[in-house]
Image (cartoon, rainbow, N blue to C red; front, side, top):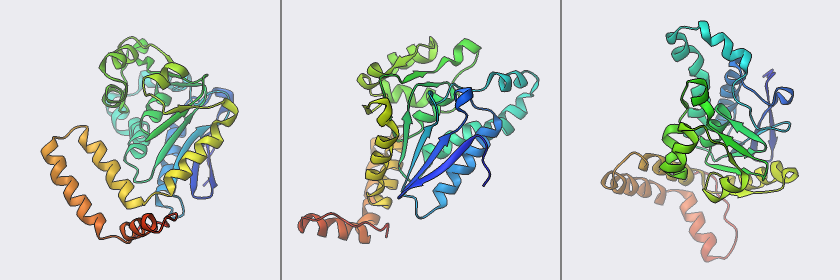
Length: 263
């Protein structure tokens, strides 16, 4: 497809989506988000892609929504905002969060508002000392609508989420690592390569088990222990009948690397 605001690359089994407006610090507009939704759908449907890496060209991961685009919202009806615009803005976050495949965000520089929300929707986030996460919606008289109000308290705790959402406080690299907002920090020049390396590691895991475990973790954030006991047993019963389970067991007992196929 002819993308203008993003680019898709493939590195082995890793599908890489690059935000590609570096001169605008990867600020986002409607076209960007529509293309991002299309790109995620393409990689999700590609059997040759085992994991998805979201990264960016240039100095910053994403400076948030483009101000010229925000200006157009002043005359946009509430119905259009809900049904047309957020079909893509929230749609991209939904796709990343619900993807059956592993998702990794490699966050270099700033990840502000929408950029922060997209990173939060991924399974893993890696950054650098120069990373900056900011949910500064409140300063525009808005709130985080792409999942941040649900996810942030569960990732960093309510007190820190209050600081980020209700005060719009920025969190930089070292603090992001300390509070669990990112899983690791690397040198800026190594960020993309480390993102691919982590995604490649995840892509080698048994895909059905990964998808069901991810689904269970997400469901558990809003479920009860009794529901999770029942759902966990059902999922485990399904997985025990797979070839991947037999291969994993054989690999452990034979002391070799497993070769998972998703069957």
